[in-house]
Length: 551
Image (cartoon, rainbow, N blue to C red; front, top):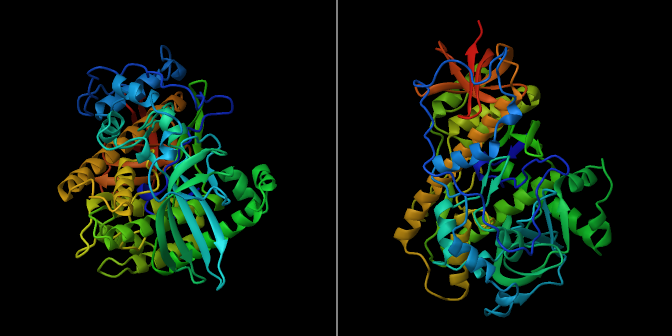
């Protein structure tokens, strides 16, 4: 179960892992030059509308059906990228520019760079992650506070505004994870090497400091440029098992002097942060995020991404660091971009959902009251909480980027905070690179690199591209799932309604956790309702999984 503790799903730290089975991932050496990707699909055929496509399934139950592994998922992924306006290969000018970069050139440049390589920096991420944006270290304070430093890779040092790499990154604005293939925002030589924070290598970073008091309150500290060295590249599952007492101490924790105490202190600080946010009304939600398990380009199954204690360390530090950066820019009177989740678009629907479970929510939206309801339901019916959370997320609505107005801040409803941005993943999100440039301009006492108009336009563009990236990713989950469901046409499944509107009705199966459209008569259903459906159509080429209600 993927627990979104006090977070809206689209504000969480994105997973890099493609969930490839052991020995199935295609790794690239960090020092290699950029190799051209396969050529993008030119003028990709638009997906046919549901009204226009033939009613017969793409897979037949008897005779003549193609085996799902004959489907070229790479081609389907590239076609989907093209359909939604993403570039799938790096232009030649980007390749030349990045291949010409010197690996240590930027380490000798810039003023005010502090040498912090002696600190016990570590990263915690997926086992196969190479594009490391964030490292962290902690120190116990004299009054029980915990001083936290979060280092973010200085991507701008290698990708200056207006460069070929920058223009390409601005076009896509995000890395896109399709399961079968990852389409990075920046070339591997940057994101997995020069502008990453790999273990044992000297790298430039932007460091945010803050103190976590005993009650969980964050006291902002300074922000500065630094030279850092990651002492331990740790893995979520290994660290979580050790912290929870179900596994051995990770080898790298045991080897690095002082790292054991360091990670325990990080865990303590993260728990303080999380408990405080819950008291303030941040929402604790769970959802089931399904990813394809792939080996040798073949889909073996769907796996649920399970969050754990180690992930909560990184996520709580990420949220705190983003708040510190946001307040810093406001204090320096520099216009910036905020990440917001507005007041729920369908509070009435959330109230009806709560009423059906015997709980009364106020007429006006209240994150604190909703938080109480969610905590109650998790305790009363933990097995159904993931489905309820998914329904709440749909009713709250998507996050977005906006030009910050300090006189009328919008805030983040799910995090119960007013100041929040995205600045901790500049290798993978363009907004984070913008925020990094704004911070560096403030530190250097230089003119801001973006006008308010530019920031406003960037906010809208990045929101649009993020939504499109999610459409690509959802499309590919369905395409990959469709290859697994062959032979099950006509079978019935338990499901939960995830969407119910004039635009269409959607449901997600309990097992496997596949979402599809409900066809035919499905009037009167509501989000969160448990139903029985029959699988009636599969079309991996077009990303269609269709159900019909039973009974």
